[in-house]
Length: 212
Image (cartoon, rainbow, N blue to C red; front, side, top):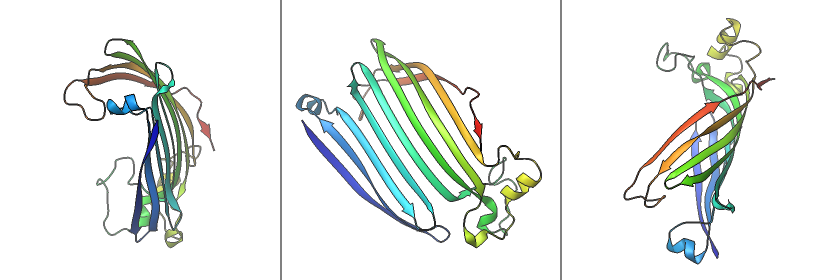
């Protein structure tokens, strides 16, 4: 058994958000038999990046067919704080877009947390059942950069006119459930030369939304 690591640095710059710095890394755990099949026992992915004016990206991913016998288990957690998330209204860009406006007019602040757990198990041949759940939390507000703090934004106008309701304005929480069936005849998962992968998944969200 052994581990493989594939780290990679990340850097960038935005005139509004500032300098971005961080790193990401894929981590694999193999056995001799699994490596001959080019198949890992466990896979982890870590990603972390911070932007100097208060935005960032933090992500954790795990996948394995062996954590629970005969069940493929996939976990993921992401936290994305963003002081200047694009917001062009509910029609989307470019409808109603005005090039004379500042970048802050078409922005708002959004912090997003997502936690996901998926499971998949064989029901015979190439057929698998799939089920999972995802928890979302959104923390919204007007654009978070001091540079635009005195400006009226499109988000402000939507709140003023009631297009965004006051009980929805600051975000909330949501639980999403899914279940379905997967058909997979690929000869190799990571680099297939032949085969089919198809899925039919139903999604639902029970009325458990919490308003801030």
